[in-house]
Amino acid sequence: MKLNDRETATVLAALRNWQVDERNGDDLKDMFQEHFTDHEPLSLDEVDALCEAINTVHTPAEQTLDKIHSHLDGMEWDSDTVKYIAELMTAAGYVIRDPDDMPDTDEEDQLAAPVAARECPPHLWVERDGKPVCDACGESGE
Image (cartoon, rainbow, N blue to C red; front, side, top):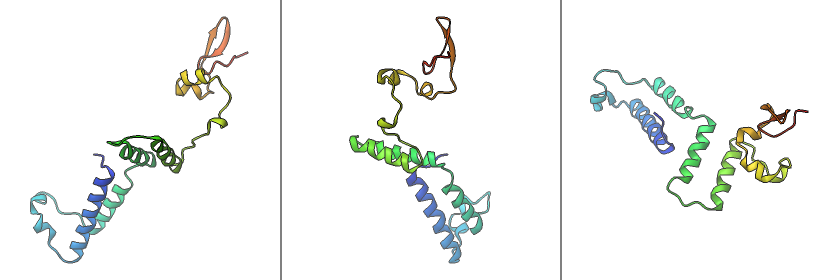
């Protein structure tokens, strides 16, 4: 099960509240007996461990995607949307290069090439007209 940011925050708040109530001597097992007919509630240390596990379930990449999703979902997009996404990705460690920093290529060819093909080497050598050519980037093997 994957929780979104709001669900995660709510579950963590409930668990932390459980700990406070337990420390204050409330009999939570009795108060929520329908949930504990077959199992004992977690100890305070086990609740701590669970909270830590919930906090670290999402990798940084997943957290970034969740933030992007939250920003896009049900919202109108504009030029600030792209800027915000670029900022999130940069903050997560992705490098967003300026077009001026890219190697000179025919823009139409670059856009038509699949993403994986733009990342040579390794070259995908094929023979064209009797000569080795990288099928990904077009580089001649001679």
